[in-house]
Length: 264
Picture 1 (cartoon, rainbow, N blue to C red):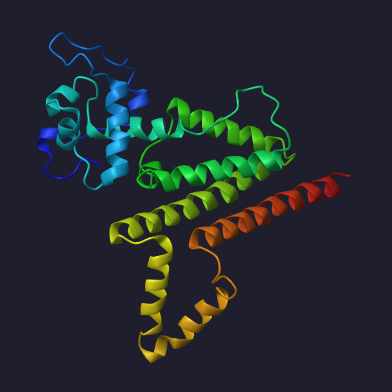
Picture 2 (cartoon, rainbow, N blue to C red; picture 1 turned 135 degrees about the horizontal axis):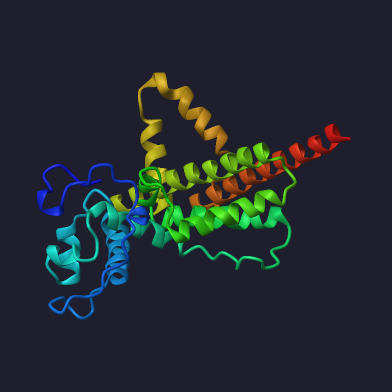
């Protein structure tokens, strides 16, 4: 995601695949580098800056200013801005509270709901990750640990391998989409200087004053939200997420039962 004109931020290497496939160990500090600077600190600062200002405003120069170093100092630890963004993305996956491999984890339904909820919260907390998730291979250690845990949960359902793949797609592409939209909405509210409830009511009020040909759309939207006036937007969204997740879990259960019937 190196922007055009960022010549000082080093262009993309031809045929780049992933920072995790470069075969290079993290460099240690040079004698002329600040004593507090290392790849981990740079990565953590990158995550904080992306959370605060978003992906569009991120640059190596801006990060260097935040750290109190020169932009060229950062290139001792990473070769390109994309490498650093990939490291930041994997760092965020490391925030997920995954159980240790081999630990007793209980019913797969409970595990799946917990993991889906954690992944959603992560997307909302770091809205810039949804763009990067589709841009990189996601083969860092934390991303792979997440993937392995997802696979273990779905293997416990009893679904066939194709069924497991489909279930993973259904659940986690749903969570990705839901969390991405939610994260963008939360950011939009923050940018507007409004709470989520204030923004929602402002938007619905503006919608109701639109051209007469849109009156039916407004009435349909209001009918769908009937009975929710006493609840906050966050509570409504949480309820919708849980219902949708319950439907997906029920669908997996139905497929497992159908498999058992056909295998008799």
